[in-house]
Amino acid sequence: MSNIWLYFVHLVYVILKISKLIVKRNEWIRALETFPGPPKHWLFGHVREFKEDGTDMYKVVKWGESYPLAFQMWFGPFVSFLNIHHPDYVKTILASTEPKDDFLYRFLIPWIGDGLLVSEGQKWFRHRRLLTPGFHYDVLKPYVKLMADSAKTMLVLEVTYTFLLFFSCFSGTNTYIKAVYELSDLVNVRFRIFPYHSEWIFQLSPHGYKYRKACNVAHSHTEEIIRKRKEALKDEKELGRIQAKRNLDFLDILLCARDEDQQGLSDEAIRAEVDTFMFEGHDTTASGISWTLYSLACNPEHQQICRDEVISALEGRDTMEWEDLSKIPYTTMCIKESLRLYPPVPGISRKITKPITFFDGRTVPEGCLVGTSIFGIHRNATVWEDPNAFDPLRFLPENSAKRSPHAFVPFSAGPRNCIGQNFAMNEMKVVVAQTLKRYQLTEDPMKKPKMIPRLVLRSLNGIHLKIKPVNLEP
Image 1 (cartoon, one colour):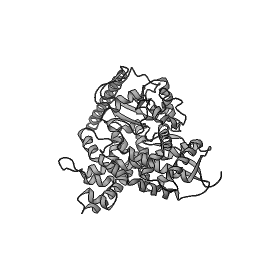
Image 2: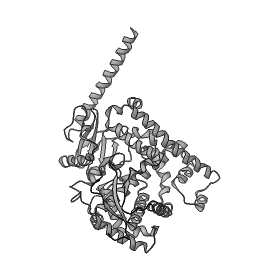
Image 3: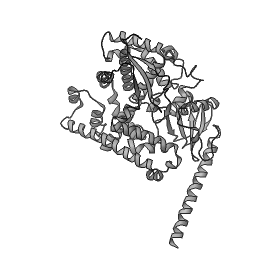
Image 4: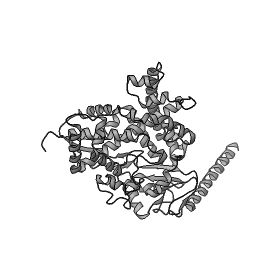
């Protein structure tokens, strides 16, 4: 009898839970009725529209042509996003300092913790203030040499008429990098498979087991880095003394940071920030560099202009220096154009904490999930002329001045823009410049990359480039 009663209680609980979800679903349908979207399946929503065959990104752009400014997207029967893809809508959303998306970000927190990417309120303000000195001019400047030396090490792997395969080959050579790639893929899997939106279902699944295992690998790696640095700093009291011995880095500043009350970051907070920046710092920049080299391989006339510019700037030297970064404006424009076409972070999301009215009078209520399609904004034909063409002259100062500053947001915008964007741009300039000085790049027409949206933009089949030393005749 007790078993029957227990079964009945469980059944009632499930019925109540489903009823609550149905009521909530109907509320969101009414709330977003002014934002029509593409037809959806009653159970799967729009999930089955995405085939993971390299066409997903273009599908969102195509839908955007039919639904100007914004449209509904459903992931399963109960989770809806307002997908926005126009600068004037993005401006409204990114003006907020609140990132809170407790649907998507809770998938990330077991991995990267409550760091700068996902924290909010006073915690975010405090951490942002404490971390900002880590990206000051005086800190960034010495790292150009380190970037240049690292790029030279990569380029020493010289084989005439060979292939560079970005993303695929590097993911298996380091346990940490492999774990990051796996975690990124698993977050995407969880997002797409709506039963996995339930914490306990995901935790009991094979994917949940893999996620926990990869988290342990990533956390062990960062904890070891922090432990070793703490040991090295145990006798140091001031950043000035550390900087006198070697380059000051991000971890030094994390460990030594103090607020106005002379309070530093907790061990848990330090690990969260290290996990956040280890992921965001290497994966996004690797994506940006890879797609830039691919773009230049597909556009040899622009590649040659960049090469001539780099050779002139270096004046016979092999490596970039800080002063050289401002001497390659055309190369910089090509990097920006590649970031437009292939943004390393193709989309971001927010949960609205109060009702918002957009410039056209349409309103979304508190609690609405808003997805900002950076890829969609960058290829929006109402903003960019011939948006799929590679044209670096779009970023001439006089042309940029004609556009909304929210038309190009590879590093987001507003108060929560990417704190490391100058570091990332410096790194991309150095690697791209030194690569072009040494190699001529051509695409492999038989192996076109297939874009797939993960947390970071990747290629389903890698990015294949043919390379040849520039000192050889074609």
